[in-house]
Image (cartoon, rainbow, N blue to C red; front, side, top):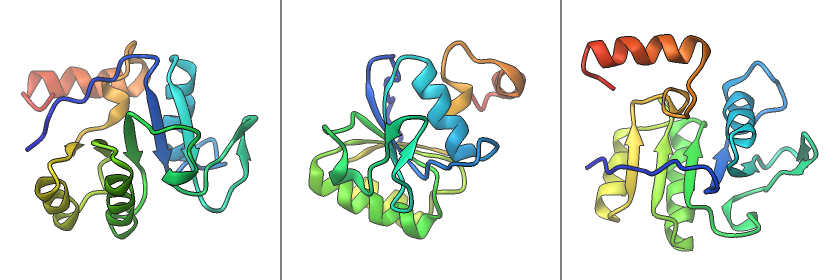
Length: 145
């Protein structure tokens, strides 16, 4: 059961799987959210800081409870994030393509968590630009947007 997750600027969003490498998707998502007015909590147990922002080791390290958690990690890590987030009372998750599994979806269903799967976050962050605007155009034409 996919429920709508409101992505209005000002929301607190944890990005699990943020990367130092500016070419990796974890960095690109972090940077896009940060530049568009979201309060971003980068999460990576192997980093201390990114672009002057402290990196959280896990969700419980976030300075306040995120409204949405974006997962950009392998499915076996995503299930742990979902379990930890559920304990913390976080209800909204964007499971970036490749980070979800059947186990993750079943966990979300059993625990009545809102989630999005199989969709690229960057196609939904207004204003959409670059290749993601092109992808969104075709997703709309073929009914998968």
